Image 1 (cartoon, helix red, strand yellow):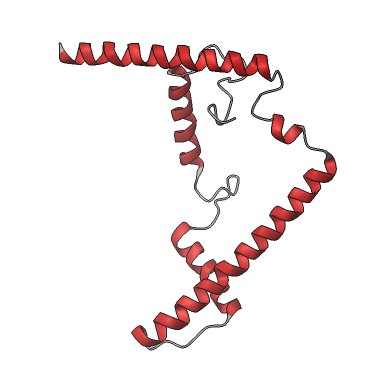
Image 2 (spheres, helix red, strand yellow; image 1 turned 45 degrees about the vertical axis):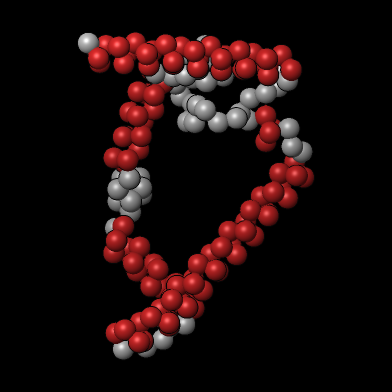
Length: 153
């Protein structure tokens, strides 16, 4: 009896949320007809896209440099005192990162080179299907079952 009441309350709450979100979505569509998930990127000119790509590339290089540097600093701070090991250089720290990646994550498998993540992909796909069946946006035309991230704008 209590479970039935809880389910009924949940259903009413979901219905109310669905209606409110649908109303908000319709208002936004009237105000901005080009409002969809990809409009931000598509509205940019080619020069801006190239600039953002270069900026992101530089950012990834800086993060990569910092990641190796942090590993080197942590190793040189902890390992000589704790285990009596020698200090490492920046490139040796990167070698340790690669070695630990191989040891703890495993080699990429021969079937697609995904490193054994095929099971994760299958599980995520099944979760997406379940979420789509209980979607908060059942009447929105821009969100389909193939959408990778249905709630993002």
